[in-house]
Amino acid sequence: MVWRIFSSVARQEKKEAKLPTVRGKPVYIGGVLLVGVAEKGEFDIKRKKLVSIEVKDAGGTSYVLDTSNIRVKIAREYVDLDVAALPKFFEIKMREVNKMIEDLRRSRAELDKSYHKLEEALVKGVIGMDIYNEQIKRLQEREKRLRAACIDMEKSIASVGQSLAQLKAELEKKRERLEAKRLLDKLDESEAEELGKVLNTLGSINALSHLITSSIIQLRLIC
Image 1 (tube, rainbow, N blue to C red):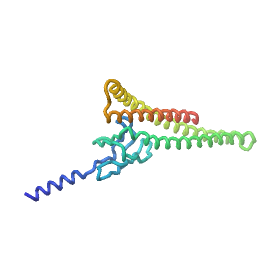
Image 2 (cartoon, rainbow, N blue to C red):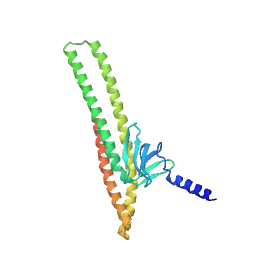
Image 3 (cartoon, rainbow, N blue to C red):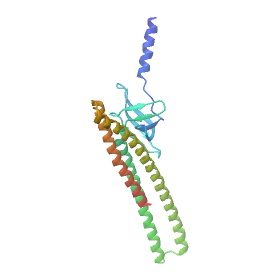
Image 4 (spheres, rainbow, N blue to C red):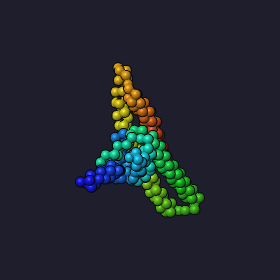
């Protein structure tokens, strides 16, 4: 009888110590913005808290998000990070986008330089029309690939922008509800704190929306 009790307690302790699985689950911010699929997570075992998560986005790029001070919901089908993770996510995302834009800008500059050299060689009689036309076709294929890369990237950025707009709409509803209660009644300490977080997040979303618009304009100028 005693053995059964100890065995039951041991099983219970083992069950409590078991940590949730995040690998392979889609990762959202604010329940709306899909940021990718979880590769792995790091837990603080004592707190049973997810302190960081590695995410792979739709483009195949992996990055790590610090979740040590962020509320996280780990469900059976997904992982949902609090909207407080938004600035960290976009700091990483925009750094990645800016690097890709620079790469595309460099490719465009090299392509324009190649066109110029080819035309110069033709004018100087270094090459004939046959070689010129052959090389032009090659450059046009490179330009076609460059434009396709720009279009894919613009679609990806625009998709994030749409999710941001949806998240903003949800937060605006929450803001209006809390603002109305503050005017008609009084917010308790937790509600006042929540309103502050909502306002800060809305400010971040507005700033990030401008960055997205700017990135799309840069892409169109390049391509």
